[in-house]
Amino acid sequence: MATDTMFGQVRQFEDFLLTAVADKAEIDVQTSSSTDINTDADGRLRITDGGGNNEDVGAVSFNLNWIAGESDLYMEARCFLSNTTDNKYFVGFTDGIASEDETTFSATSDTVTIDTIADGIGILWEGDATNLSLWAVAGKTDAVTVSTALPTRLNPVATEAFTLGCKISLDRKFAEFYVNGELVHTVNSATTLVAAVPMAPGVWTYAQATAFNLDVDYLYAKKGRSTS
Image 1 (cartoon, rainbow, N blue to C red):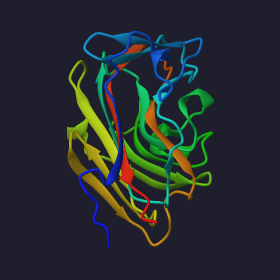
Image 2: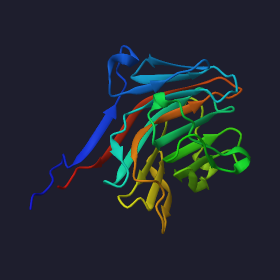
Image 3: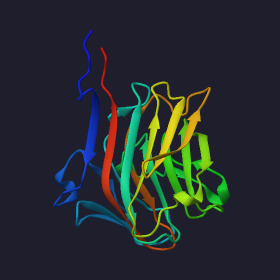
Image 4: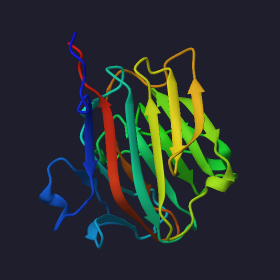
Protein backbone atom coordinates (compact mmCIF):
# COMPACT_ATOMS: atom_id res chain seq x y z
CA MET A 1 0.00 0.00 0.00
CA ALA A 2 1.35 3.42 -0.94
CA THR A 3 2.27 5.80 1.87
CA ASP A 4 1.74 9.54 1.56
CA THR A 5 4.78 11.78 1.64
CA MET A 6 4.91 15.32 3.00
CA PHE A 7 2.80 16.26 -0.02
CA GLY A 8 -0.08 14.05 1.11
CA GLN A 9 -2.34 17.08 1.56
CA VAL A 10 -3.67 19.62 -0.89
CA ARG A 11 -2.61 23.07 0.28
CA GLN A 12 -3.43 26.53 -1.07
CA PHE A 13 -1.69 29.59 0.34
CA GLU A 14 -1.96 33.20 -0.81
CA ASP A 15 0.31 35.90 0.57
CA PHE A 16 -1.17 38.63 -1.67
CA LEU A 17 2.17 39.79 -3.09
CA LEU A 18 0.29 41.25 -6.04
CA THR A 19 0.44 44.32 -8.22
CA ALA A 20 -3.30 44.11 -8.84
CA VAL A 21 -6.01 41.85 -7.45
CA ALA A 22 -6.83 40.59 -10.96
CA ASP A 23 -3.32 39.15 -11.34
CA LYS A 24 -4.37 35.70 -10.07
CA ALA A 25 -7.36 33.71 -11.27
CA GLU A 26 -7.20 31.59 -8.09
CA ILE A 27 -8.43 34.60 -6.07
CA ASP A 28 -12.04 35.75 -6.25
CA VAL A 29 -13.17 39.13 -4.86
CA GLN A 30 -16.34 41.14 -4.35
CA THR A 31 -16.73 44.90 -4.05
CA SER A 32 -19.80 47.13 -3.93
CA SER A 33 -20.90 50.74 -3.64
CA SER A 34 -19.70 50.84 -0.02
CA THR A 35 -16.66 48.54 -0.23
CA ASP A 36 -13.42 48.31 -2.20
CA ILE A 37 -10.43 45.96 -2.39
CA ASN A 38 -6.86 46.96 -3.15
CA THR A 39 -3.38 45.54 -2.73
CA ASP A 40 -1.49 47.10 0.17
CA ALA A 41 2.07 47.12 1.47
CA ASP A 42 3.73 44.02 2.98
CA GLY A 43 1.65 41.53 1.03
CA ARG A 44 -1.76 42.49 2.35
CA LEU A 45 -5.10 42.74 0.61
CA ARG A 46 -7.10 45.66 1.98
CA ILE A 47 -10.89 45.44 2.16
CA THR A 48 -12.20 48.99 2.66
CA ASP A 49 -15.64 49.36 4.21
CA GLY A 50 -16.74 52.94 3.64
CA GLY A 51 -19.70 52.79 6.02
CA GLY A 52 -23.28 53.10 4.86
CA ASN A 53 -24.83 50.55 7.23
CA ASN A 54 -26.26 48.62 4.29
CA GLU A 55 -24.53 45.21 4.63
CA ASP A 56 -22.70 45.75 1.31
CA VAL A 57 -20.19 42.94 0.83
CA GLY A 58 -16.43 43.21 0.50
CA ALA A 59 -14.84 39.78 0.26
CA VAL A 60 -11.94 37.64 -0.94
CA SER A 61 -11.97 33.87 -1.36
CA PHE A 62 -10.45 30.93 -3.16
CA ASN A 63 -12.63 28.94 -5.53
CA LEU A 64 -15.10 26.08 -4.89
CA ASN A 65 -12.43 23.36 -4.81
CA TRP A 66 -13.06 22.32 -1.20
CA ILE A 67 -15.79 19.70 -0.97
CA ALA A 68 -17.21 18.97 2.47
CA GLY A 69 -17.42 15.24 3.07
CA GLU A 70 -14.52 14.24 0.81
CA SER A 71 -11.83 14.86 3.47
CA ASP A 72 -11.12 16.99 6.52
CA LEU A 73 -11.16 20.69 5.53
CA TYR A 74 -9.14 23.38 7.30
CA MET A 75 -8.67 27.09 6.63
CA GLU A 76 -7.27 30.16 8.31
CA ALA A 77 -6.66 33.84 7.58
CA ARG A 78 -4.39 36.39 9.26
CA CYS A 79 -5.96 39.85 9.43
CA PHE A 80 -5.63 43.39 10.77
CA LEU A 81 -8.49 45.78 11.67
CA SER A 82 -8.11 49.54 11.47
CA ASN A 83 -10.63 49.96 14.29
CA THR A 84 -13.04 47.79 16.26
CA THR A 85 -16.11 50.03 16.24
CA ASP A 86 -19.25 48.49 14.71
CA ASN A 87 -17.50 45.85 12.56
CA LYS A 88 -19.03 42.82 10.89
CA TYR A 89 -16.94 40.12 9.24
CA PHE A 90 -16.76 36.36 8.74
CA VAL A 91 -13.75 34.08 8.20
CA GLY A 92 -14.44 30.52 7.11
CA PHE A 93 -15.91 28.28 4.42
CA THR A 94 -19.13 29.01 2.53
CA ASP A 95 -20.94 27.40 -0.39
CA GLY A 96 -20.34 30.45 -2.60
CA ILE A 97 -17.28 32.32 -3.82
CA ALA A 98 -16.75 35.97 -2.90
CA SER A 99 -18.20 37.41 -6.12
CA GLU A 100 -21.54 35.70 -5.56
CA ASP A 101 -22.16 38.65 -3.22
CA GLU A 102 -23.85 36.64 -0.49
CA THR A 103 -24.20 37.31 3.21
CA THR A 104 -23.09 34.59 5.61
CA PHE A 105 -24.25 34.77 9.24
CA SER A 106 -25.61 37.39 11.64
CA ALA A 107 -25.80 37.50 15.43
CA THR A 108 -28.08 40.48 15.99
CA SER A 109 -29.04 40.68 19.68
CA ASP A 110 -27.12 37.41 20.20
CA THR A 111 -29.45 35.39 17.95
CA VAL A 112 -27.38 33.69 15.25
CA THR A 113 -29.03 33.34 11.84
CA ILE A 114 -27.77 32.06 8.51
CA ASP A 115 -28.31 34.60 5.77
CA THR A 116 -28.26 34.11 1.97
CA ILE A 117 -25.76 31.24 1.98
CA ALA A 118 -27.14 27.75 2.57
CA ASP A 119 -24.03 26.15 4.08
CA GLY A 120 -20.98 27.48 5.88
CA ILE A 121 -18.69 27.23 8.89
CA GLY A 122 -16.30 29.70 10.49
CA ILE A 123 -15.91 32.57 12.92
CA LEU A 124 -18.13 35.66 12.90
CA TRP A 125 -17.83 39.11 14.44
CA GLU A 126 -21.18 40.90 14.66
CA GLY A 127 -21.20 44.53 15.77
CA ASP A 128 -24.96 44.37 16.40
CA ALA A 129 -24.68 41.53 18.91
CA THR A 130 -25.34 42.21 22.59
CA ASN A 131 -22.36 40.05 23.50
CA LEU A 132 -19.51 41.70 21.60
CA SER A 133 -17.30 38.71 20.98
CA LEU A 134 -16.26 36.35 18.22
CA TRP A 135 -18.82 33.65 17.42
CA ALA A 136 -18.21 30.08 16.28
CA VAL A 137 -20.93 29.44 13.70
CA ALA A 138 -22.03 26.85 11.18
CA GLY A 139 -25.09 26.16 9.08
CA LYS A 140 -26.47 23.36 6.96
CA THR A 141 -29.11 23.80 4.26
CA ASP A 142 -30.29 27.18 5.61
CA ALA A 143 -30.39 26.07 9.27
CA VAL A 144 -27.93 27.11 11.99
CA THR A 145 -26.04 24.14 13.48
CA VAL A 146 -23.40 25.96 15.60
CA SER A 147 -23.85 29.29 17.42
CA THR A 148 -21.43 29.76 20.30
CA ALA A 149 -20.05 33.05 21.64
CA LEU A 150 -16.31 32.74 22.29
CA PRO A 151 -14.55 34.25 25.33
CA THR A 152 -14.04 38.01 25.10
CA ARG A 153 -10.34 37.57 25.89
CA LEU A 154 -10.06 36.49 22.24
CA ASN A 155 -11.51 39.73 20.83
CA PRO A 156 -9.30 41.28 18.14
CA VAL A 157 -7.46 44.52 18.96
CA ALA A 158 -7.28 47.38 16.46
CA THR A 159 -4.12 47.42 14.30
CA GLU A 160 -2.83 44.17 15.85
CA ALA A 161 -2.62 40.95 13.83
CA PHE A 162 -5.11 38.17 14.59
CA THR A 163 -5.66 34.78 12.97
CA LEU A 164 -9.02 33.00 12.67
CA GLY A 165 -9.48 29.45 11.46
CA CYS A 166 -11.77 26.42 11.42
CA LYS A 167 -11.83 22.72 10.58
CA ILE A 168 -14.67 20.42 9.55
CA SER A 169 -14.16 16.65 9.64
CA LEU A 170 -14.63 14.10 6.87
CA ASP A 171 -17.98 12.98 8.32
CA ARG A 172 -19.03 16.66 8.77
CA LYS A 173 -20.03 16.02 12.41
CA PHE A 174 -16.91 17.32 14.16
CA ALA A 175 -15.62 20.89 14.01
CA GLU A 176 -12.81 22.90 15.54
CA PHE A 177 -12.44 26.68 15.77
CA TYR A 178 -9.12 28.48 16.20
CA VAL A 179 -8.10 32.01 17.24
CA ASN A 180 -4.43 32.96 16.96
CA GLY A 181 -3.51 29.30 16.63
CA GLU A 182 -5.35 28.31 19.81
CA LEU A 183 -8.10 25.70 19.66
CA VAL A 184 -10.91 27.62 21.38
CA HIS A 185 -14.04 25.59 20.64
CA THR A 186 -14.96 22.10 19.45
CA VAL A 187 -18.26 20.61 18.36
CA ASN A 188 -18.90 16.86 18.30
CA SER A 189 -22.37 16.43 16.86
CA ALA A 190 -24.60 13.42 16.31
CA THR A 191 -25.70 14.99 13.02
CA THR A 192 -23.85 16.71 10.20
CA LEU A 193 -22.99 20.39 10.60
CA VAL A 194 -22.80 21.28 6.89
CA ALA A 195 -24.05 19.63 3.72
CA ALA A 196 -21.77 17.64 1.40
CA VAL A 197 -21.25 20.53 -1.02
CA PRO A 198 -18.32 22.38 -2.65
CA MET A 199 -17.07 25.25 -0.48
CA ALA A 200 -14.72 28.19 -0.74
CA PRO A 201 -12.50 29.48 2.09
CA GLY A 202 -12.38 33.25 2.47
CA VAL A 203 -12.94 36.49 4.35
CA TRP A 204 -16.20 38.47 4.10
CA THR A 205 -16.92 41.96 5.47
CA TYR A 206 -20.23 43.84 5.61
CA ALA A 207 -20.74 47.61 5.56
CA GLN A 208 -21.84 48.95 8.93
CA ALA A 209 -22.42 52.52 10.15
CA THR A 210 -18.72 53.10 10.92
CA ALA A 211 -16.08 52.82 8.20
CA PHE A 212 -13.19 50.40 8.73
CA ASN A 213 -10.43 48.58 6.86
CA LEU A 214 -9.78 44.87 7.17
CA ASP A 215 -6.39 43.83 5.82
CA VAL A 216 -6.01 40.15 4.89
CA ASP A 217 -2.35 39.26 5.35
CA TYR A 218 -2.74 35.71 4.07
CA LEU A 219 -5.39 33.13 3.24
CA TYR A 220 -4.64 29.42 3.67
CA ALA A 221 -6.55 26.16 3.23
CA LYS A 222 -5.71 22.45 3.25
CA LYS A 223 -7.46 19.12 2.75
CA GLY A 224 -6.60 15.46 2.31
CA ARG A 225 -5.84 14.04 -1.11
CA SER A 226 -8.00 11.44 -2.82
CA THR A 227 -7.15 7.88 -1.80
CA SER A 228 -8.53 6.16 -4.89
